Image (tube, rainbow, N blue to C red):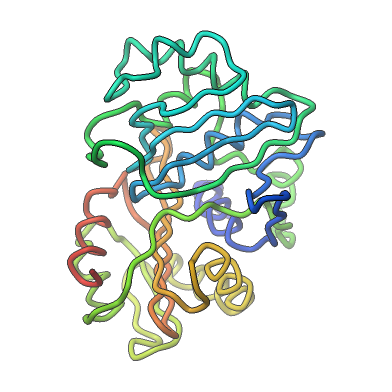
Length: 289
């Protein structure tokens, strides 16, 4: 297997696993024995495309809430049981000068030996402009975290194309009501950033575009995991079968991401070259909302 595809596989795998929910409905993203809960926190934020409020709760007591959009942390809206939050709280838009203080807060809420959960809700105060805030990929680089890390054991298995175990589930990044158009139309609207895509089910069933190797991998994944993906998308939506778009984010190094969009019985999986956030946002809103 081409090791260049590992980041894409890691993102596809994040759609497979069954989520575990804590009392109150928050989704557990790191268990008490997780080696690096901060990595799980950053991955949850990095996979958030549309504007959302993410509340991270540690089993140890601290809680931190941030507004996230376009895989950027826009602002800190709440910090409970954490010291040193004053420099970030009340700031309309986080900037480079805040990154060190923010990292300290993220480390504190994602403390080792405590389970970590996340609750997603509507974005808080202000808007959701994606050209501002602190890129999650930048924060990950500063703390030496690979957002696409499969783990040493998984990487060794991939060399011999062994079956892939399922990782923690990806968080929701946007839900919308379909009002027209098609998934193929959505793919076209994204533009050249969408280098490969495939639709399974619905009116556009079987339609695809892009290099044969990429499309074949997407098809193989859907052949094996379509039911599991639908279950996870239902868990991310307010009602079963609701239209939803999930973007599994790029890093500053890898430069690729995966988009998964469902409308009615149709499901699209695609590979985005580069960030592509703006193109996907515009296409989703233009075609489906």
